[in-house]
Length: 252
Image (tube, rainbow, N blue to C red; front, side):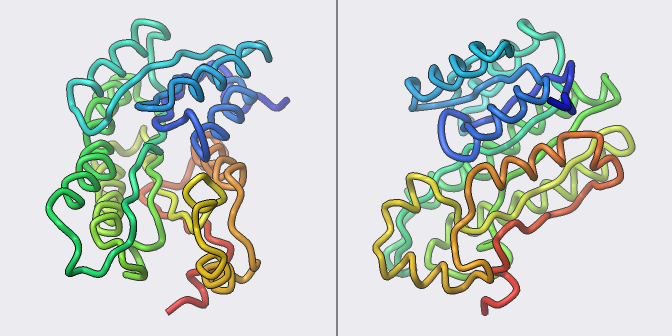
């Protein structure tokens, strides 16, 4: 164990399953105290907490709908009460509606995607920024999607909301420099519950777009999060790192 995050406190939203859960395990393994943020999957959050504590790590489970500012405030208050600081924020929580023709997209879909995928990240960064400024240290990691760069696919509200995270990244990288890093990960398709619901034809179409001819694994994204959270990325800020198995290289 290298303990690259020793004595650090990390908030990971949406970490009861998928990529966030992998990040929670890896961050804890590397010495961080982890706040497992979740909204609906309490059972999954309890399982991650149990895994971390059984391995000798420290973790706190906090339910928060990040699309609600008051719940985000409570998330940070509970974290500070328990650990006294916040060194890492991973804005991983998100929602994804079924892709539709633009004629079928309604205001409810826009509201849902913007509230969670964009406003949620905004609320979390806003609360975190003041804490990290006082500490004069920290790392903020936004989790976006390559759809925001490519305009590919039919889920327009999702793509627009995720594109907004790239702008948030650049903005806060400027105003929080030189002590706080702010970066973004542009994910390709990852093996999660959502991808497992795809039809075989859809899976083949998307895997054929990648150079590696497969979807990413949650651990592969979490390892990039670890890099951005650690001192190994000490000279990187304001960037969006594409982690997509080469899809962006050959897609339209």
